[in-house]
Image (cartoon, rainbow, N blue to C red):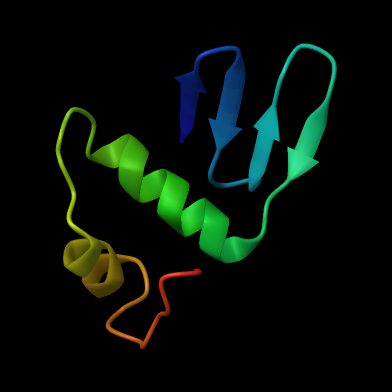
Length: 64
């Protein structure tokens, strides 16, 4: 699926974030996180919910 985020286009299938003049390949966890945010627009998402849904309950430090 593709989402427009300001001047960027995010494609979860190609795992890319593209602007007018550049395209960046994203790491898999970044794709999962960005996809989750795009699918849950206008919602406040708790840290616990992110860990449960994106990191699938794995231990995650605050630095992640």
